[in-house]
Image (tube, rainbow, N blue to C red; front, side, top):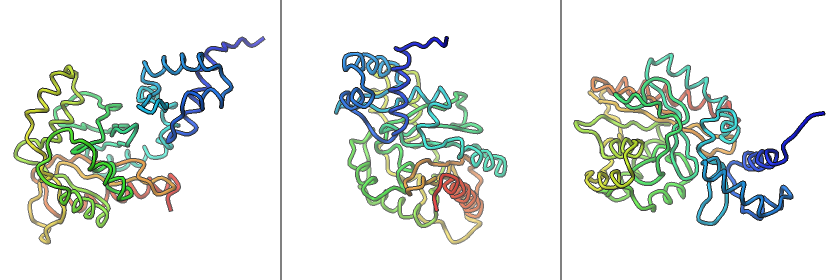
Length: 293
């Protein structure tokens, strides 16, 4: 006779409910009523899952899948729109260009690294897969640049993580260029941009109090690392940090962001354009694999 564990079965049913609607959130009442579970029992399970980051709970007291599931592999992939269908295009792009590649997505109001080939941050030996960063200026622009304009407006309206030196106009130009070209280029600067330092700080193991203190000493973000218009002369030097392109789901939403990381101070406009077009083609092929027409 097959033996089952009713408590474990309840946990699985709750996770399955959330995984079947990864873009939706459920209140305690909705979870309990849908699964016909006792509310106190359901609350206890959700509390334990939330503590372990398998489930998230927002200010509206609703629940959704949590980031810890990323590290469990298959369970997380089912909640992130067929990640296994996109990975081959990441691998092919990496093999063809010989450049580091990163796949990221917006998840629970954060930009999260889902996969990488090569070094995501030069000189950083950490795996970084599963790392997440708050989706607020100046972080995450390439993760929402190809979304509905209202999504960009909402992102711009969020309290910035560090001071912003310019108004929204540079961001509009960056987004317009990304829509026109199919990719967005970020350049290397003589010193690391505030957003790069900020992302490294947030991904570090430093205590939050120290991170907040250091954030206060970063210079304002001015978006100057982004290229809005490529020079006409292909031989013009263009030190490229990374290039990003969108992967759309079947509804046309930006599901993933595919990024190549050349980190090449000796690049030219011609080389940057070739990398950008290759990245955009790979992202378009991945979109088609997800059902995008």
